[in-house]
Amino acid sequence: MVLESIINPIKAEAHPFKMFLFGILFASVGIILGLWIFKEQASLVSVFLTVFACIPLVYHTIRLEEKKETEIDSESRLLKEHGKAISYFVALFLGFVVAYTLWYVFLPEHLVQTLFNTQQTTINSINAQISGNAISASFFMQIFTNNLKVLLFCIFFAFFYGAGAIFILTWNASVIATAIGSFIRNNISQYASYIGLTKVAGYFHIVSIGFFKYMTHGVFEIIAYFVGGLAGGIISVAIIRRDINGQRFKRIMYDSVDLILIALVILILGAIVEVYITPRLF
Image (cartoon, rainbow, N blue to C red; front, side, top):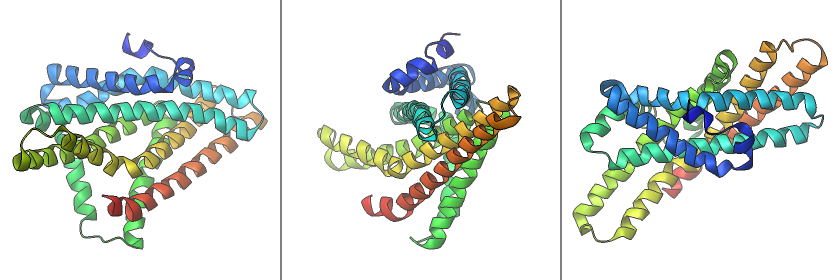
C-alpha cells in the first residue's frame, strides 16, 4: 500500500517533475523485487510490478479528467486541463526509461540477459521487420502503421481495463530502455578498448547520444499513446458511471474524439521525425 499511495493526481499536477522521480522509484522497486522473487521471469514480472504501483494514480487521474468534462464548458480550456495529466504521465514514463536504462547499463551481463530477455527478443523482431528499408514513403507507412497499432492497443486497454494502458506504456518504456542501454553498453565497451577508462566526457557523450537517438522521435509517440489512453479511459469511466444518456455523454465523446485526433497528429509527427530526421542526426 506504500507505493500506490505515495502520490495522487492533484499533487502530480502541481509537481510534474516529481513524477519523473517516482517513475525511477517505481521501476527500480519492480526490478529489484522481480530479480529477487521471480528471477527467471523477471523481464515481465518487473514490468507488472511497476504497473501495479501506478494503477491507483492512473485510475484516479482518469476519473478526475472525466469529472472535468462536466465542470468545464470551454473545449480549449478542457484540453489544457487534460494537458496537465499528460505532462506528468510523460514525466513518469521518462522516469521508467531512465531507471530501466541505468539498470541495463550497470547490472552484470548475466542479470541483464535475465532481466531484459523478452524485451531484446521484441527488439530483434522489430529490427527484422524493418531491416533493409531505406528512407522512403513505404518505410514511413510501416513505422506509422506499427505505431498506430500501439495507439489502438492503448485506447482499447484503457477502455476495457480502465488503467490498462499503463501496461502497454510501461512495457514500451522497458523496450526503449533496452535499445538505449544496449547502444550505450556496446559503445562504451568499444570506446574503453580504444582509449582506456580515463576520459569521463566520452562516456557522457555516448550516454547522451544513446538517449536522444531513441527519444528524439520517441517522445512524440509516447505523448500520443498517453493522449489516446486518456481518451479511452474517459469513455470507460463515463460508461461505468452510466453517463451514457443525453448531452453529457455526447460532450464526453466529442472531447474523446478530439483527444484521439490529436494523438493521431502527434503520431504522424513522430513518424516523420523517426524516418526523416533521426537517421540524419544519429
